[in-house]
Length: 403
Image (cartoon, rainbow, N blue to C red; front, side):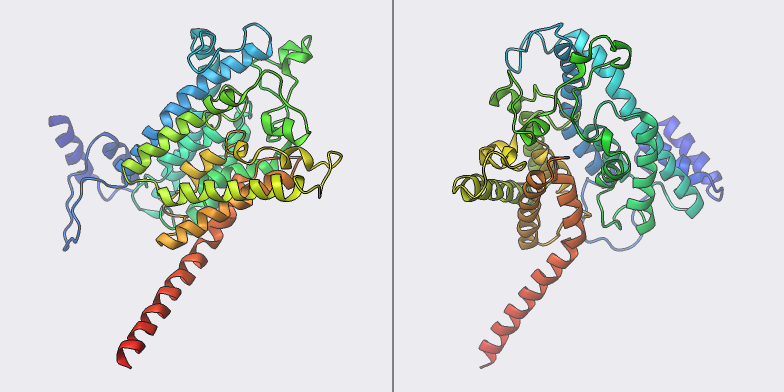
């Protein structure tokens, strides 16, 4: 308590300094600020922006830990140095070797994401003279989970700067942005460095030094294989569900994503309407392709679109990042629809468009991030028409009663 009071006194003494916003951010990282609302308040609650962000981070930590182990597992599996794990709790997955290789590669992504992103936040806070906003706490954790594990750190740094400045700060900061900052960062990487985002290779640590073993780094991710109308040998449906597959760090384990979704719904942080409607939209589009196009013979196996069109409709949920996007990206309270009916429309269109982009873009068969960014732009329009519809219905009721 004495340390907290001394820090508070230091803050008060230097409150007119230009660098004080940066100090305040560090001060309130572990301590609750000694400030109370001076005006009249309508709602008193224990949660605030920082606690809300920390709740989402807690939901993401299992995906991060699993992704670290999976990185090491995919490394040794691609080199043929271990056998495929026999299930989620297999003896060849949760090993110290996998942890070391995975941590050596994944943790630098986390460090760069937070280091560069928070540095930009601090710079803008000092220049504009406002407090450092906690909005990047979740974005900093999301970014390492949605990028390829072998992305060069300098590329990630450039993308983070672009995403924070263009995706958030130019709109006025946290709560004012219309685009999800994490997805803005991924979009920048996709368009600026497409060869690094294609997912056509299985990552192997030290692959450059292993020039004598080219077969060790060949092979595609699941979506890339299906887009080429091939299958990855030895990978079953349960492997896809548990996450024992190559892919971005946090997107592979559908089991842990579902656990995170239940946690966010229980804590009332994430919207179950958006999550459920996104899944429904994806399943509907998958059904249209499987039975409406392939099932009726409108397309044959010679088409470049046949591979992903012929995938069982439900399998679209476990071979890509649609679930991760539905739980952690689409539910962003700032960029998503705010009305209940709007959330159903918003989520359904995300799922529907995601599978459409996935199928019709075989060069890069993952469309969830583009679909979410597109619907981020249209979310205010959806809410506008929902509200206007409610207004018109109420006016009709008034006219009926007046008559």
